[in-house]
Amino acid sequence: MAMERTLSIIKPDAVQNNVIGKIEAQIEGAGLSIVAVKMTRMSKKQAGDFYEIHKGKDFYDYLIKFMTSGPAIVQVLEGEDAIKKYRKVMGATMFGEAEPGTIRANFATSNAHNAVHGSDSAENAQREISFFFPERQIYSRNKKVTNSKLETAA
Ligand code: ATP
Ligand code: MG
Image (cartoon, rainbow, N blue to C red):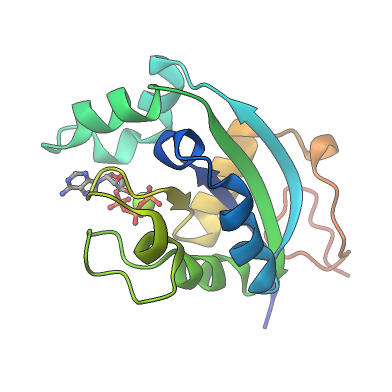
């Protein structure tokens, strides 16, 4: 399995609900390492660009409003098979469908307010990571990451 990086966001609902630490504990408990992290309130332009693929969908306008409604934690996770592993820890998108014990089962309150974001492919992970972090702000614990911009794989 490849050592990968993925972009994680703890969304404004979870920050407002004061569960940042509980979510980070689940992420670390799954064997993922936080290698870059910051709190930021996204501008409309940033959120619009970040979620460009959903433009035109009926939930798009609300999604942008929600993601800009307050501060979020944006972070880079690193680990074996990190993209898939983190999606599994997050749980299913739709409210009520997330498997018991997942972050969304524990903290989502609706389809929109689902506590966390995670990249869904290696290509999107790289795009989303570079959206928030230059390579020099990522403190890798492993030299064999396969989807980083630096191509640190041996
Ligand atoms: P994310 O991209 O945030 O990690 P995801 O990949 O599980 O979530 P997407 O299909 O990419 O799900 O949708 C992006 C986000 O848009 C969802 O996380 C959710 O906040 C919101 N969303 C998706 N579908 C709906 C819906 N039917 N109603 C309301 N909000 C939705
Ligand atoms: Mg998505």
